[in-house]
Length: 397
Ligand code: FAD
Image (cartoon, rainbow, N blue to C red; front, side, top):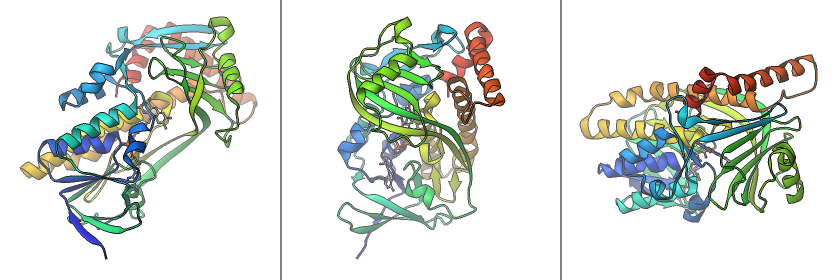
């Protein structure tokens, strides 16, 4: 026997996208519910992004969602590139639009957004998996769900905000032909690591090495994220901690530029660098937001930032429609977000080609592409206009 439940907006997923949409709606008194497959502790401890763009911080400020990041976030504005041609730093707060990042772990942002949503009286059903969105091409969509004990249910709504990531129910429920998927597999994989070790540089470190890319990004004073390019198909546990640190040290050229500060590896996962974009981002009453709308490879740290931006746009448009009977924002949602998404994709693609050697063999064209990569790095090192372009896209969204 299924129970019947109703809300004006059903939000799928309690990640950054879903919780920003939820806060904007709840703050205006709109009846909404957030359905989240995972348990609360999992959602609040899942370490992923950490670099918030200046515009993301402005959005969170505008809606009173910035208290945590204002008190615990740290300004960040330098990146360092290392390669066979030496190293150089860019202080991007003095380039482009003069903007900085705020380093604030995604799990803390999610915890803040959740706390605020609950304070406002919001409802999150944890441990409830959305199975499918039905009748999205009508004005009365519904979402079938299953709770942690396997009990079925159905939510009825006017709108569904699909904020449930790349493998969620929103994407799966799109009928064939309703939406086009643009997909690119960059052929590169990263072993992503979180280490219980203080940052080794006061900058984001990008090491371009003949053995593959290595990256260094501060998370907190005691935790650092590292990336190591690895062969496609490498299991996450294939490398011992000793091998990981040796490889990082080698690729980051620790002998030349100073050793890394080592520590226990807390988490590891292999990420295949892929990008995709769905177009359009709306199917009737169902809207796609964040990773459900587009997957941006982590090479340029855009995913969480896009998720917050799209969530603000959708939240505002839903408020206009539901409170003021003005559907213009909803009608414009897809085109507006896609213009931001494609710009982020373009920059991420450029970063991938800057940081990785040619994939798949050492033929003439591989050597050619490798020389192009060195030229790209050299131009970034010496050309002020190239640096301004980089800074604008690196921090901007
Ligand atoms: P998610 O955060 O994935 O949230 C989706 C939620 O939906 C989840 O809580 C999930 O449990 C839930 N869900 C899924 N399916 C269902 C279902 N069927 N029913 C109900 N709930 C469901 N981005 C940056 O901007 N900067 C960075 O530095 C950065 N670093 C990253 C590092 C790594 C290792 C990874 C993996 C990603 C990184 N990203 C970064 C990307 C960023 O984490 C994502 O883009 C961001 O989490 C997207 O937010 P979202 O709310 O759209 O999706």
